[in-house]
Length: 321
Image (cartoon, rainbow, N blue to C red; front, side, top):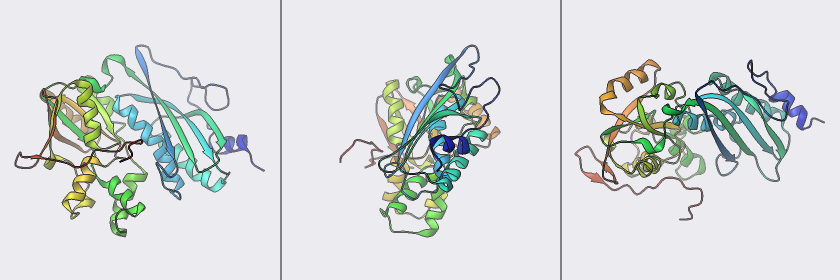
């Protein structure tokens, strides 16, 4: 009967890059360039909490790594490697094969090799833990506390689709197969802007990834930077599949919907053309969605410049109401 070590050898033991030490020893080893700092992040994905039972294992392998690569992007870091913790209630070779393929293909395209980790049996459901390592020059790391008054606020990608897909899959919205088909990949296979983020070194000021909702996550930048923002609702990049949804539902999905894993960042208005050219150079969709102000408030304005009052707050694992 196949066991833990056979599982690792069959699905996860792939050669590490030159000068790295990967799967098979007690620790992984990786080289760091002179003058660089290590950026690292860990995320847990728990069945029934972060992904639904029956989620396609290929997509789950992709997402398990993508949500961590998004954190590296938020710091402007380039990936070095990753570790995978995997707790399974039983061994399912077909499931593992597809999960490992989804994980490996993204790892290869992102130049973030799997260097080690751990496997164990869980008592209930699947639990995944991924830790990523990247490198970034200390003076160029994109931190949350660096926004400045009169900065432009930028966002990559689109908003709203992952939230709508989740509502459809959980029954919070009546099933619409066409809408689910158009939005599901944004939830299950996010595509963080890994090629774009490191190009912002020395250009962008503050940044983070949108994982728990735009308003909530942008609020973290404002709190850390002791400033506020004007957000232009009509400038927000709504996923085209959401056209025709009721306005109140659309507003909730766009302003409060999570699982986006796109980059929200600030940069001086004088660098507007540079930022745009960098995005165009790597084919990234980019929108200028607001500006930073000195007053420590976050105001959302409609197309006529009138404040609107969103009812959403974003996602919190421990919120009970």
